[in-house]
Length: 410
Image (tube, rainbow, N blue to C red):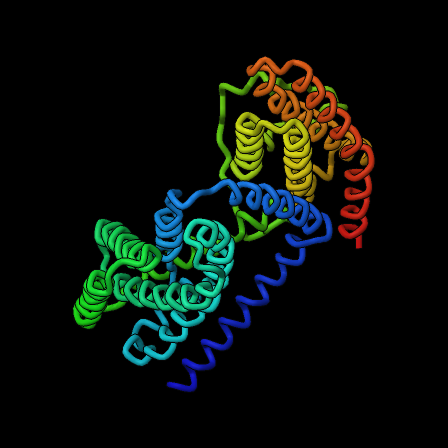
């Protein structure tokens, strides 16, 4: 049985890695990497300039404790369980201790990268306020990783409890305890206070360890959480490529009927399909609304005109780039293939819908500046958005759709 459990573990991890690699190669392509490097470079420059303005009274320790506490409290355990396991592995529950122990540690390996990146990002702020220097980075990293292990084990013990209220309370308590000990250490509090919180944390984990031993695994809960975790990844991947395993929800949205007013002429067939899919399908409409709102808020809160132009163009690119999978949405529908219309109409209709969507987004991006009375800046951003939308649909999108059609025909 131990060999079988080991084989199951290895097979699940290999399958998971293959699934990740299959979609990550589309997500982190050359275009997205260029945008990420550009965005991160701008954010790093702005952050560095902001750090220089901080004084010793700035509550850096509190901010770090809250941010790191939230990330530590978010500690899902990757079990790689599947729906059939509730039947075939349930009788072997007592022999799967090694399987689930490896699940906890592989979860730690994946999530430790997030802790490292967040701590590295917060360190310049802490150093500027405390004056301790970057020599404290390694001890803090060791502490944060130790707290991550503590959170993962407590989380695993809590998964034997079915009540949702218990899970919410546990998440809050782990956030409170993790944030408290980080705050005390970052604030250089007395060793007695730090030891007291550490003692409470030790008692907390041992209590649930002994309580959980009396309970059986909640297989339905574990499988549901694993399905939800993969669903979240598929939703992100679907922004960059088609994900067959992801089934989006379709909403009626009667209040938007004026946008999708039907014209039954042949020339409008694909336009109606793409427009209705964009408006009514949750993954596309949600993506469009989120990017539009985030971009508009960033433009409204920023005072730099150059940064606002770059922000509007960046979010226009992200919107256009991530809506491209909509083009292939109907390729596997038989009834679409029998339309008595030219194939070229499909491409032209999609380009028109995407171009119009990006132009509407350009108008929204100009509104924050117009509302603030910055008429010239608002008009410039509007015109820049229109020009970018036209160039995107006529050049980049044209090449991208040709490549997609060629790969589909092969």
